Length: 453
Image (cartoon, rainbow, N blue to C red; front, side, top):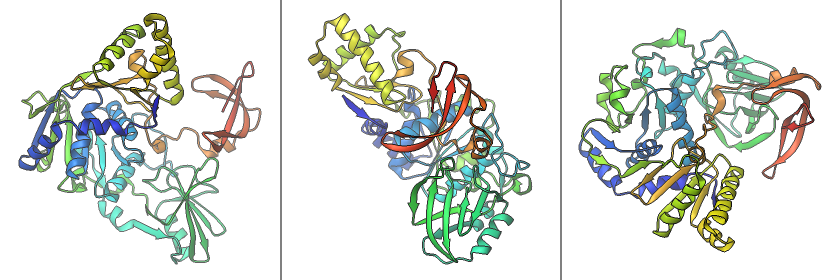
C-alpha cells in the first residue's frame, strides 16, 4: 500500500491538466478568468494552482466562516507549512489577548502580519472584510522588528519596549500578547506566530532563539533570526475606514471568488476589487474554462458497490486516492474494503495486495472529494461512509481553549469535563512516546478506569 502523509500530489494532478496553460494565457491578456464546473475541494485548489503558476499572491473570497475553515484546512494538507492569512472573524470568540479588555482581533492582526511578511502569500476571507476598518498599517511597518542570533541589543530596552507596546508581563506565556522574563531569558508570544519564542541573552547579546511548546516548555526548533510585531495595535484606537484590506495588498494580487453571484448577492461587490485580476470560480456567466470535474460519487455507505467501482475503474487505468483523518483510519477503511473483496468478490490476498498497490492512501483528508477527467478520483472517508467530517481549523492560535495557566491551577484528583467523553479525574502529566517523540501529556481517568492522554 502506498501511504502518503499529505495531499501535495493532488495539486500535481490538477496542475497537469490542460487547463493551466489556458488559464495563465487568459489572465495575462484579460482581467478576469471564469472557471466553471470545479467540484468538491478542487474549486479551492484550482485557484491556488493558477496563482502559483503566475507567481502571484492569492486572496480567496468565500461565503462564510465554515467555507473559510474548509479552505484553510484543505490547503494546509496540500502545502504543508503554508502560512495562510485568515481574514475572517471567528464566530465563537475566545479572549485571546493577554489584556482581556482589548477587542478580540487577534485573527485580524495575525492575517495582516502574514500578508505583510511575505511577497507571495495566500489569504482567505469573507466579503465582510472589504468594509472592515484595519489598524493603521504603518504600525505594522514601523514596529515589525527582526532579531538575530549573536546580535547585540539593549536587554532592558527590549523588555521595556514590549511592555510599552501592549504586551503583558507574566510568569510564563500561554497566549498571544504575553511575555515573560526569567534572568536573561525572554519568552514572547507575538501576533502572527502560532507558537511562542524563547530568546536567551548573554548580557546584551542574543545567545539563542528558539520556538517552544508553551505547555510542555520543550524547545521545538532553533532559529537563526526571526521577525515579529513588537506592539499590539488596538482596533478601537487605530482602525480607519480608509485603512482596509485593499490598502495592504500588492497590485499583482489575484482574487478568487467562489460562486460570485451568490457571494455578492447579500454583500455589495466593492469597486476596489476591479483594480485586481480576478478568478471567478463556478460563476453563472459563460465559462472561459470548463473543467471535466464531478462531485465524489455517493455509494450510500455501500462498501460492496464502492469496491466494485474501484475494480472496474482501476482495470481501465484510472487513478484513485483515498483520504482519511489519520493512518489508523486508513488502515480501518482498507480492512473493510479487504473484507468486502474477500467475501463478495472472492478475491485472494495476492489479488487484493495488487489492487491496493494501485491506490494512493492519504492520512490527511479534505472537505470534499472529486473526480477529474473521468480518470482521477479523490475519495474522502467521511463521504464514503456519509459521516460528518471531524474538522479542525489549522493554526489554532485563535482558539486556545486550555492554556498553561488553567492547567497549572489543577490538582491531581480534580474532576474535569471532557468535551466529548464527559467527567474525568485529572491525574497530572505523563511523558509518553508518540510517533517516536517523547511528549508531555495530560492524563485523564474516566469511570471504569479508562485512560485518555
